Length: 280
Image (cartoon, rainbow, N blue to C red; front, side):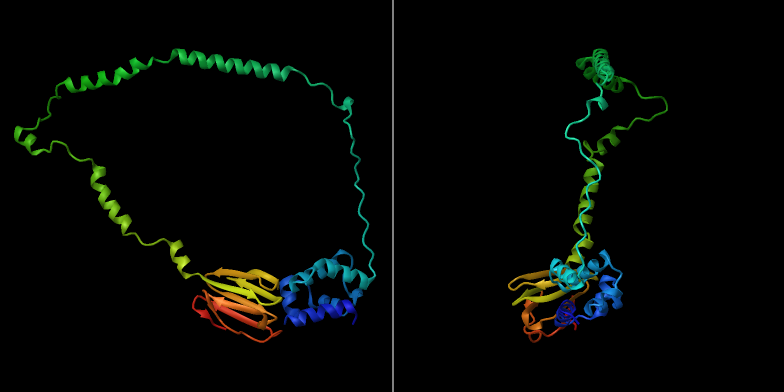
């Protein structure tokens, strides 16, 4: 095994990661991963696929991708591909023969259409009824309605009934409003508030450089080396899984409460949390 493959294997084992885990995440077959670590480059597809495998492998481990690709090129004696020449020539100045002078007819038509719209708007304003006459018409109609006599066959209220009727009946909205207000005040809390009460928070802080993987509610949040004095805060509603290759190099807190020492230096460890706390 050469220097390139041996370095990949050591970085992987230091983090407590198996080839099957890398295969599941990157969709690279285990046979190709073993060929990378063993530097059996003739067993790989070749070309850009090999560099893509190296980048995906390095990204999962949290190491420098460009450096890993450079180490692969040196180990495989693969020459960098020359950059393709741009196939088109760009002219500094446009060809005047291909850009004849535009016809002024569209501009003339546009101006004529604008003038027609303005004239139509002017005549419409002129044909509208004046404001005072329009304002007086509703008052006249109202007075006619009050002065007309009741139709035949309709009974008028007796004086006793008129006395029993309230002088000013409250509007229906004023009666319904208190009931509606009571229902709104007794309405159950929203679903969003219930969901917010069920969430929990896990904070991971690095005391020294440590590889950390966090999955929250089935979604990968991070898979990289957490630099010393840096921290990662994650919120979830169902489950959080924290994996590390250096249990002694990180501190973990659940909802603000520290878990204390979770392992020794360079010791792989997996922690599983739910809303009740640490379950594994």
